[in-house]
Length: 335
Image (cartoon, rainbow, N blue to C red; front, side, top):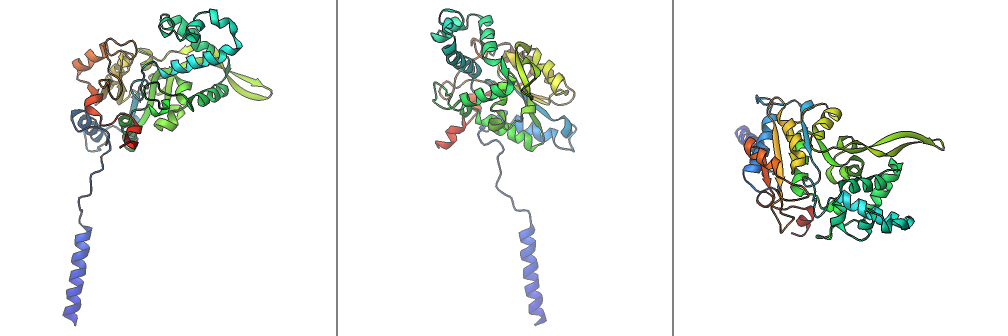
């Protein structure tokens, strides 16, 4: 009886030992919308390297900063920047109270859908931004912007603009956050405009959005404190001003930087200037079927000087056609 009990005991111990052994589990791919290849491997290897405490390239959590451009890097920027589309739609809506605009430029160009004439003058574009983005409280701007985003659609894909985000980049941002990186958006687009959707779409909170800013002032109206938007640019967050804004609002040189155009070049240069291991990457739009194909000769999102420097300095070039299995989240739903 005793020997039989010992026999069963040995069997139980054996089963427990077998079950406690580390059985290989199914690999969970942190970047499932990325094709296997050098680009994906370089991203994963970099993150593993700098988050490994035993690595000589280890970066402490407080210094793990990843910065992303928005237009063309996190969502589509063609055929025109989405914020420009907002400006155009707002002018058309406001024109009901301004009959004189029918004969006055640049409003005339907007009302006649003459985009070529409209884009012939940066001064005109600036004027339209002032008219449509200022002279109101921040709360009023948020209300107008949220209503617009509910229905604003992309002309090529007939999808809401907030659906035109890049699925692989969403996965990358989430992967970084899982590894205790803080993800910032550093864009030439309006800071307040991006805050309309960034938390919902990218899971990036308002305080981690850096963009072009209008001057504002504090006012009290009917005992209600308000922030009023003034018709003057405080910070145009593009090109060389991106590093300035990063230093001003973050105070650390980023560990990783992602852009797609010459407007992001200085941000990547600044990132590379930091001590220790750094990662710089550019999204190259190469897929005319699933999105758009453009680089050096494009008026929107021109990738020329930054492309040359990326090759020279061996930065990562993300080839949209080659590196991404899918581009938009809605592609996943259709499969």
